[in-house]
Image (cartoon, rainbow, N blue to C red; front, side):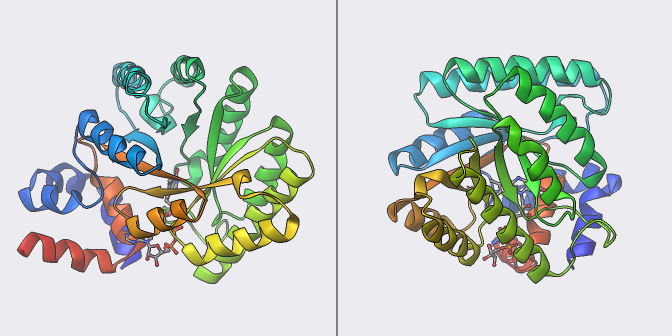
Length: 306
Ligand SMILES: Cc1cc2nc3c(=O)[nH]c(=O)nc-3n(C[C@H](O)[C@H](O)[C@H](O)COP(=O)(O)OP(=O)(O)OC[C@H]3O[C@@H](n4cnc5c(N)ncnc54)[C@H](O)[C@@H]3O)c2cc1C
């Protein structure tokens, strides 16, 4: 089921047609408050009232015209202005291919630099998502360059990739900001752990290695980008054992997933952020959410029928 859904996520014919269907639009509402930034920012205000921070991402990836990247960058600058004016505890997270990475790396760098500078004006971080493994090395190299010019930048790393332990080591000297996730794409066994328990074990080992680095004095912001509460609790136990305070890491979850746990962890004294996605180009992103938990397909069907 996971493979089928991830294949559907990549299929151009389906990508073109499925999102136009009314029932698909209805089902996606579970994971995003609306297609426009205003819906996302309004949802962010509600999180803020509860003491939960927010991350904003406009959906869209693999642009085909570089001019689209200019529009995306201008859009995010506007969102950052809104975050500031509304005094939201919010940050932007974006994909490099959304800023034209496939077409013009220098232009992507200029855009990312402008966004990072804007984020720095209000003391915020600009987050770089991690895409499929074909982009892993180039994204990390891009981040190294971006981080050297803009300390207020963070990157997402995927625990299912076998290379990630060495990527963490490579980034530690940069005082990085790292969001650790399990990984959302279909990757081959040669480069990625396939079994859930192997991915989870690597996740825990990577998180602990970052906590140890923090304890040893490395400046590092650690984001646990997972809904796996058992794993979060294991990381927290290791942090306690190492004498690392809870403030040394934060939990990042997606809007609409385990909202009860987001509130519970926030009440228990963890810093929690909800990533709110919005935009019209939600199809591949939504299919990856379904693939993460095939039971969501039944949920979607129930919503459509009910
Ligand atoms: C803030 C954030 C940013 C992310 N950024 C990236 C990125 O840049 N690159 C990337 O490859 N991946 C990214 N991901 C996705 C990530 O890689 C995983 O695919 C996703 O988080 C599901 O794995 P999990 O860690 O929640 O653990 P799982 O073991 O998959 O899930 C643990 C539990 O969480 C719940 N759950 C998980 N997913 C869902 C879902 N879709 N619907 C309903 N319940 C669910 C279920 O109860 C499940 O049992 C991001 C995730 C988050 C939270």
